[in-house]
Amino acid sequence: MCALNLFSTLSSLTLHLFDLLQQNIHFNIASSSKEKILHFYMQNSTLILDLKQYEIASLLGMTAETFSRNVSKLVKEEKLMKVALGYKVAQ
Image 1 (cartoon, rainbow, N blue to C red):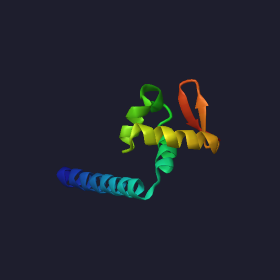
Image 2 (cartoon, rainbow, N blue to C red):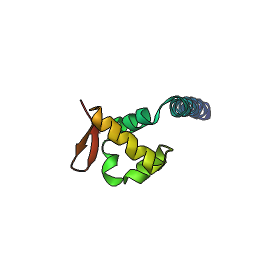
Image 3 (cartoon, helix red, strand yellow):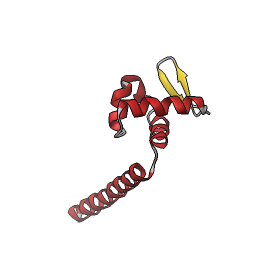
Image 4 (tube, helix red, strand yellow):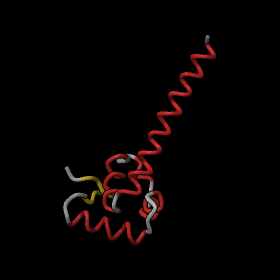
């Protein structure tokens, strides 16, 4: 019985992870560069301190130049704010 419960739990976890992966793929295909940047900063506010801008750009699947250009646009649109150690999403 224990093996059956373990299998059921692993199956459920696998399906959940598959669903999350599917959502992530859809988000990356359907989202603009600016949306990806905002989403990244909303989800990873503590991680940002350790990453350079070119590293974040690489994680988001864009060039450093595209990342920089879109960050500048987001700051001008007041969606991102410059802070001492990088940027944060404006409230």
